[in-house]
Structure formats: structure tokens, C-alpha cells
Image 1: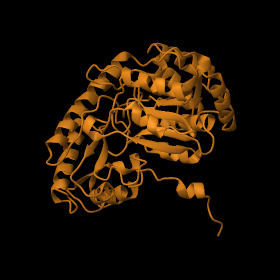
Image 2: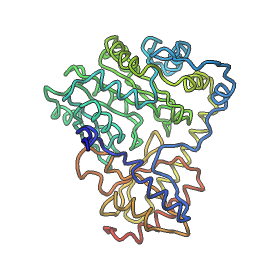
Image 3: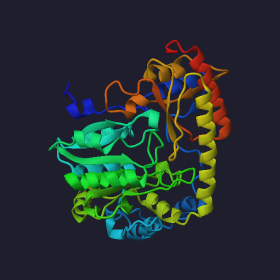
Image 4: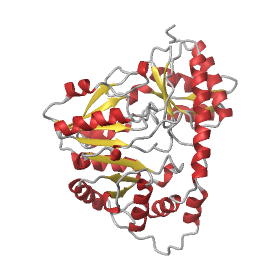
Length: 399
């Protein structure tokens, strides 16, 4: 039998999805599973977006421009301008989800063997995207003790080699919920200018910043236009994960021209997704105010509940809708599988994502899990009851 590629063998499985078969079996056995493992909001998609798709008068579903429908790109530029970001239509390329934006950015900006520095823990699929693009991830550790703040720039400097071509961040962060400050971003800007690097910034959670803290984009940084690539998606802000619409944005004309060639090779982003996304730009502010208030309440409950459990520590995130918690367990992968295979609390259990998959360093995150507070408060309360009960009887508890 022919052998598959080395790249396919090296491609890491998703830590978010690899436990799905165990969850499905738990459900077949009649247990209720509370899904805190994946960033799939239960918030309703804006009606204006759904109506645009329902009422579309399209008779032929044609290819769109490879960079996306022009009317959508023009309107989307206005969205970014509302955040004081100097983005024009020609700076935007629409992609098939934020995932494709990241893949194309990596293939456009980096050669095989180039190195990219990423603060860890980071969104697990960055490992997969870098593997597909033959880019080498050089992780730099942020720690739970200080809430996963940006590591000192001096530590970044130690990792810079002749092969270093870029730095990548997620702001607000997945999986940590950390929100970078302007000072941290300015320090990164100076570093990429000093070493002539690309700065890739995944900013899909900008609508979800809490406690009055300010969202600062890399697009707010002056003097580094040619170094900056912004990556975005509609999935989270409109609770429209299945629409598969993202964007790659840069003022660097060479980057945009190179990215367009990859976009042409895949022909075009989804038509109905773009129709819905363009209409979604008319979503009233009241929608976001309600959603933000909902997530704030969920966050406050979840973090308080976690920190009340014996042996558990979880810093309070300032953005997105994730947190990383340190648990008194021997192995996060084993624990998360045990929850689904062997644990039953009044016919219920909880599904978490082992944090090991959000690190690139082997052995890191062994006693950490990521939780997504995308369920309503009643479900979160039940999920935390399950987790508390599970930690008391888990055979691999460490204290």
C-alpha cells in the first residue's frame, strides 16, 4: 500500500476535536455532555445576516472575485475604519474562514524552513498551519502566574536567528483570553522593525473585551505598515462559525499581490457566506452590547467557580471567551478522556480541551485545560458541578 506523506504524518490532530468520539459514545450511553471544549457560541446569529441569505435573489451561484465581492470589501473597510484602523478596500482579501487567512499568510510571508515566534499557549491550529506551510514554530512561553502576559522582549530577542521571519500573536487571545496592551504591542513593533520581520496578528475576538479595557490592533501601530498582516473572521463576532468567511488584511502591496495568487488557486470564497457577512455589517450595536454583557456574566461565574475548587487556579481573562485553568491532575489528556469515558455525575459530564495541544513545547500544559464559556449560565453551573465532583474522584489527582 502506498505511504502517505511525511507532512500528513507530522500534521498534529486538533486537541479541540480529537476527543469527539469519546463524547459521542458518552451521549450514546445516555449521559449529558456539557461542551466547554470548543469556541462554538450558543448566541443567536444576527437576524439581518440570516435574512440576507434567506432572501437572496441569486439564480446562479457564480464564482466571486478571488479577493471577495467588491461591495463587501468596501463595506468591510468601513467596519475597520470605525475602529480607527486605516484600512481601505484594496488592503482586504476575503478568505474561506480565518483559517484560510492564516494559511495563505504563512505561505505568502515565509519560505520553507523559516521560523516564526509565537507566544504559547496559542491557538492549536497554528501548529497545523505552520506544518502545512513548512514553517518552524519557535514557541516562547507565557505563564499562568501572570495571566499569560506577553513575555519580555528580551526573551524574544534570544530566539531571533537568521531563519526568523516573523512573530505571530492572537489578540484578544485564544486560548488564554489575554488582551495585549498598547505598550506590549509597541514593543513588538520595535522588535519586528529592528529585525525586519512580519508581525501576524489574529484579532477575531475584538468585540469581546471586558472590564473597560481597550482593544488595540496592530493596525493602530504607526510606521510598520509593510511588516503587519492582520487576520480576521466573522465566526465569533456574529456567531456564524459555519459561514466560513475571514479576511487577510495588509498595507503591504507585495503581501497582498502574493496572497491573491494563492486565493486565485482556490478560486473564490463562499458566495452565501459573503452575502450574509456583508449584511451582518448592519448588525445594531445593541446586539454586541447584549452579547458582551452575556459573556461578562458567564466569565465572572466561571472564573469564580473554578477558583473556589480546591487545588484549581485560573486567571481572569480580559477578552475573547476562553480561559486556561490549572488543575490538580497528573495528565490533562488522560483527565479529559476520563471525563468522557468513565465519569458520570447524575447522568452528566463535561468536555474540556487539554491545554497540551495549545503548546508547541513537548510536555507543556500537562496540568492545564482550556474552557470556552460559550454556554448559558444554567449549563455552566451544571458543568462546574460536574468538574468539581470529577476532580474529587479522579484517580490521577495530584493533591
